[in-house]
Image (cartoon, rainbow, N blue to C red):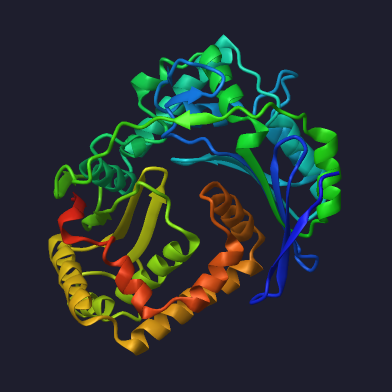
Length: 425
């Protein structure tokens, strides 16, 4: 058995255990013996943006249709014996699901009992793909309906309209599910090719939080996992210009009040560090949290409602932007007020009391996340794939300074990189 390394988080008095299993899989277990539930996520560093790539054992570049990672996720729940994976989970009482994002695909379950039985199902079905011409064609109709449904979703459209105005070449601007035309090109052979490229255990991670014993988890990995040859995959993206394509995009949609995304593109030639992402979280809390002067001004002017307005950091391989979003009768006025606030903060810095409150809020969230097995497991896998650490996030929140935020604003939230996307009635 490979040796597990303990990582202590002093601020929360938790520890998690990590190891590179002999199969190549990276394993993280954060035990919470007092927890009533346990959450496991088994994921691969493979998302909707990975459509052009080269394997280290091949000379040729491979191009596959948009939407194939999401399609593959759907097909993984079917088995050669005809028993649906969800039916297997029903016997253990686990609540199972999966998702595909821009940069990863994850299979997960939560349970209050029979954890190791459910974990065995998870490790088993994700290692056994089964696709036929007939089942692949059947899925095209199902996913085609899903694509059309999202086309009618104003919150989905406002996001992708913004990304389309912001990114000129990067595939982050394309829908995760692809298009009805692109998925029509998917074949069993292409699915197997992508599976064997990206579902290599060296490209994957297993993250568990809750009432689980790290030793028993490793024993089950020893039993279930077959060692895989470490094939490196080079993801290939066309060079993305630093400039945005257009500053404003507006479309009609089925909304009672206009909805908006106001995003700021930034240089994404490298992934931000744990400390940088936490500093951005504090920056957003100070700028747009309900403690911020901007939030109060927008609310008092009737430009936003209390529940919908928020700021988020959206980043991944080759893309990064800060996004403010919400509902407003006048999104252009909201965008102008945000730009005015940014100019003021650049000139005068943050009020020390506001910075202290924002830092406390982000630190409090970071600590309270350790009470949720679901948040912990998902944070572990997201952090690992981004080269970051959940242990560092808590200390980064505790140690951030107002000067760090000013430094972040030299590379983020630049006025010339702003895109306003609106869906109006």
